[in-house]
Image 1: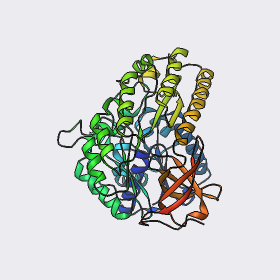
Image 2: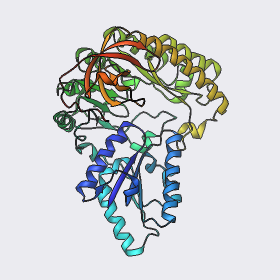
Image 3: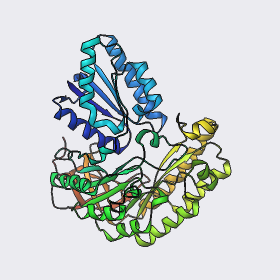
Image 4: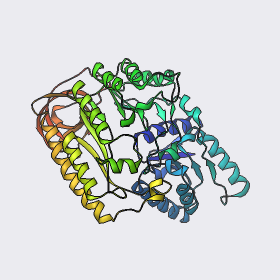
Length: 453
């Protein structure tokens, strides 16, 4: 079959899509660049919030119309949404042919073969193929390196989550924590580096709990140092849980020059009462202790976070505590969301949602807080030289865009850069959203590529 994969959601889904595409090619199927040329369209989905689900439903509606108009097309629903009862209902409504959970991505080819046999025997009606069982053996699977010319590579080090936050659907979609063997991780890392990847991002629902489920594998701090030793110019990781962010991880960041001075550490709320309702196992003061230790040992560290506004039961006083925490930490970057009730989560079953107007108003105030502190943090780098991984031409055509070691978005005039890759940039001007600078010079060219015209 001619197949096309559409990916939604997190970087782990992007990583899983590489496995899906590799399995398809190995199974004799052809990958096509557009859905219009495909006989099989696979949607690798996200279910963490309602918005990604709405996007998938919209696409499925369009595909159903195309089939009704006579197009011979098979449709697969994969990823986190597929694992949920909500996903099964959506698959039934829109006539999805393949329903494959995130733990079964390597079963895509046998599932297609099963679908073709069923269709040959009984036609389209009643022929859906489901693959929804969790599979721990997926952690031994080696995902192929990204295509040549890829500067940033994603590497999953563990799957699942043992924390059961009341708002989160992940434990139901990806199962319990399972750490991948160190040998498998390093084999993928070495293949990426040999392919020319400049920046590797270690992935997991909770990366810093790596090794807690299996005494045969090292701690996350030891793994971080082992991956850094492979020779990538830049190593990043996401996402961390404050409950497992220990001093040895901070020491590993401080002692490894190529581990970036950037930490994404979701706090979700500044109110202990709300954190308790969320079933987050830390409290405000413990979070602040981690921040103080990070800033003491890694002075240039840039901190980003996740914040949920309007969680059920959040009072104005609770929200004010979140604003106060933001002022105390001074997050340089933040991902902020109005609470989105997800079917199947404890919060959805137990708590009454707040009015949309309340959530929207609080989110607006938090965004203004974020703009202030992002500008303060970004101005700290004015006049300094930062290392930037330049990746693409900006939308305006006048700038190229990249990211600093501290994960700032950095723009420089396009006429100063003839090739992609790592460059030293003097920061001339900062806004809340980006740094603007002048290129001082390029690092060793490595996989640097000509800019797209």
